Amino acid sequence: MSLAHTKPGPLIPTVSRPLCPVCGVVSYSREGIHPQCAMVAADSVLVSRINARKAAEPKPERPPLRRFERICPACQAVQHVRRRSCECGRVL
Image 1: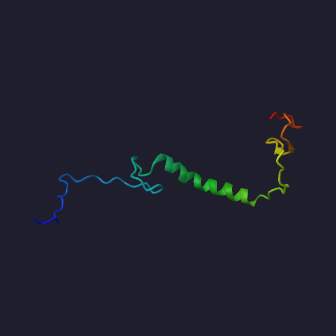
Image 2: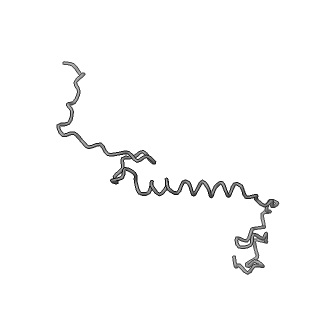
Image 3: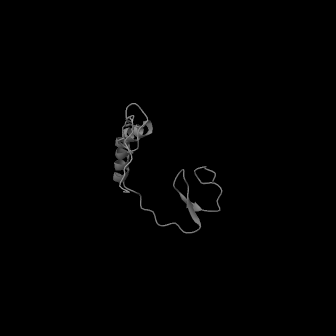
């Protein structure tokens, strides 16, 4: 008896579903791309423009913060950690 037997093919051929071009998983939508992957693909151009713009902006040079200092999220002022409010009026 030989162990080289193979299983017979299916009697009813299965319909192959298209693969999503973004994530490579079988797509369940009619267009062949997942809706969330289509949004990622459409937004990729905009995200690359935003990232390029951010990279081109000069970053302000600030000395490193000491342990007892923090930065106000509203006005970017350096203040002591025990202060409850900033000079700009934001309460932390």
